[in-house]
Amino acid sequence: MAKDKTIKDACFGGNAVVGQSGGPTAAINATLAGVVRGCMAARQSGAVAKLYGMRNGIEGFMENRLVDLFEDFADEKRISLLEQTPAAYLGSCRKKLPDAAKDPAFYEKLMLLLKQHDIRYFFYIGGNDSMDTVAKLSAYAKKQQYDIRVIGIPKTVDNDLLGTDHTPGFGSAARYIATTLTEIVRDCAVYTVPAVTVVEIMGRDAGWLTASSAVGRIVTGEAPDYVYLPEVPFSMEKFFSDVRTELSRHPNVVIAVSEGIRNEAGEYICECTSAGTVDVFGHKQLSGTAKALEIAVREEFGCKVRSIELNLPQRCAAHLLSGQDMAESVRVGKAAVKAAVTGKTGVMMAFRRTGKKQYGCRIVAADVSKIANGIRYVPSDMIVPQGNNVTDGCCEYILPLIGKNPKIRFEKGLPVHISL
Image 1 (cartoon, rainbow, N blue to C red):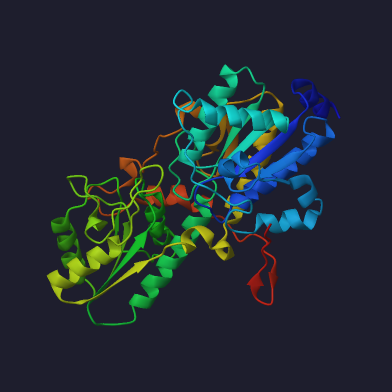
Image 2 (image 1 turned 120 degrees about the vertical axis):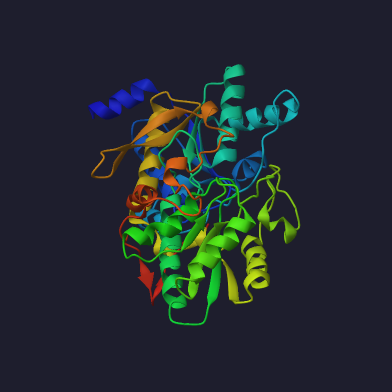
């Protein structure tokens, strides 16, 4: 009771709203479940009256498309199922907020809607671009002297957010990739005919996901022969040399590449096969990196070669959900609510790893203005000097995030999900 009283005294009453933005993950709904649970607890202390969910993020909020999440999750069983459901339960968007000085009408409408629904807590679950939304809204609300707590909750399979040891969603994606690559390596090893398999993995600027393909090396000894990340300029000549060396050792070569690998001039390797389109944030739509390398290897070596693009399963394969990722996603959602009702705003909840021998982490509130629009790259000391693989230290960093099997509810052999 004393703890509830402390929270109540530090906050004010009002309603809360939560949204999901950017690419979904296998664990983003677990974070939403954490926010729901946290707000339910805050309701008991009088801090939160209602919890609304934005349909399709800030885009849906601007169109006044809201749902009552307290009503939607009155049944505890639904919240539990939400935790194991992949994708974004509320729907997502890729809406970039304009500059307040250039589009004051947008913010005036936004502020009108916040006041109309008495929103005093704003939770946004997302990655780099979503944290930009949190930073802009927080700054504008402060300028308008509107008392609201704006909290960013990290989510991205790319693991490229600054200010945090890792991001929810990454552990599950890493588990899927590490598992899939060990299986591909096993499959390719059954033949004696010289062959090269190139596996393309998500990662425009940071190579964390591709790095996770090597984790099997410190567990079962099975991993790709080479791993190429965007952090290291890609040389086709050096690539051919690597392939030639490995083919001389054994007939079946498996290679993992990030979709965003670039040459010395900064040009994407996939540009020769990509349409060159960009999204609303100006990011190039990448595809065809593995296919481009497949064509190059075939022309250079004349051997059997195939390309594989892991694509969407990297972020939605909840049947391989990391138990650690799921638990931390729920935990960070709850922590965000606690931070808000005790006065924090303009922050992103972040993980700080504790302990050197045994994995652990704590959650802190970090200034979102120092996080938004930045990129956390794989550090050079986690990449081998030759630039064509990652170190065992990198694998050891990733391994605890993969975690153990969570308790997933299945029916007739298939996992059970819920939808709005």
